[in-house]
Image 1: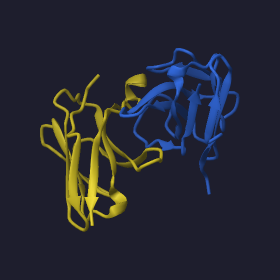
Image 2: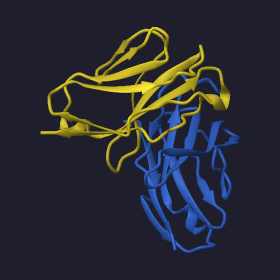
Image 3: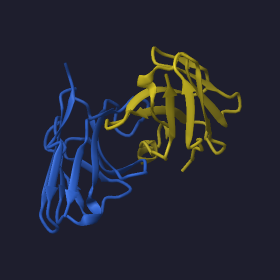
Length: 116
Length: 113
């Protein structure tokens, strides 16, 4: 069955280290998204992509970067991890033509990141 | 951005219907009303969406007010598995970034056996 996976599921790192979270989907969806969720808050959009070589900044993009070299993957990189980036990170994908938004997004299981 | 207002929490008894309200008084003509839910320790999952007419699927029903300034998600027979945070979200159909999912705090639904 098609799916969306995230790895690792849990990670502990130190302040200042570079960290990359993986997101892989097998639906061949055009659009992919990264969100973070902090305790007591809803999800906030970090970066998103409408296709290969396309990336866009979301609401809370500072300190994060993404690249889209193929359809299936959108890795999220924390250039220099900070304690404020301790959070649960969710990846999502959807099949819509570019910026149109009528279809559902499918979410991964999440990665819990702790920055010490 | 058009915003939504939901109660922080609601309680229901198992096997009874649940009506989850959402107010969106500043909705524009091309905004779709989407509902997602998030079970404990999981990513959000899509529930239903609609524009003007009431909608039904295997998970729930969506009742949209005639003036579109409010909507109600209806779970016909709540189960323990329906205990989750429910998010009501407006998405602009042709809005580019305005069509992105903007999550508020949602309504935490508790289901009692």
